[in-house]
Length: 243
Image (cartoon, rainbow, N blue to C red; front, side):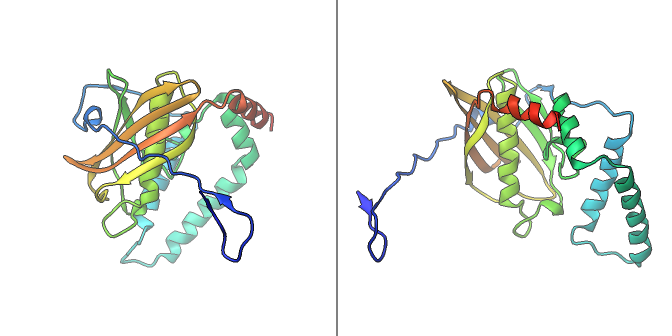
């Protein structure tokens, strides 16, 4: 069948939707499983990670901030620090080049990265069956609806846990689709558990599934399909590393 647009014109074919995935939450049990910590990054000599930790504190405190003090003097001090950092900082292009010349993606990841102020961060363990498990308590800066984590942040958590789960199997790729079922609200200011695991590989295509729990309650499940991009990433890394 084909749809004819209003007013006539060329008929367009109907593109069928793919079947919704069925996510088996059994292997995605949120209870601790005696896994081993992965993606750990040691403290850096320059003190960047310590600086980022303090910026995260400011980020959390200023989200919907209410203060019983005059903020102008504090703002002036923060502005002075920002000016000094800007004067001392390498350019964005240089920072990107160094990241990819060293392959130092994990530290910049918006979920686990110690040098990324956006990251909560989440620390992941890997279980014997290859499942990744991470715990986090997300603050108000991740809130969408009242008392709930923003849906886009939920998707971000899934994209990272599924991607890292793939990476640690040795068969990984770039996200083609991420199908998320929001089953119940994911709470802010309460502990949540994020899990993910690779479920199958067919040629260049890779599937992984994940879940988010708050206690025994399933907040969301997801399936992602990833594709091995061949030499594309290596070529991009080479180009960016060269500046």
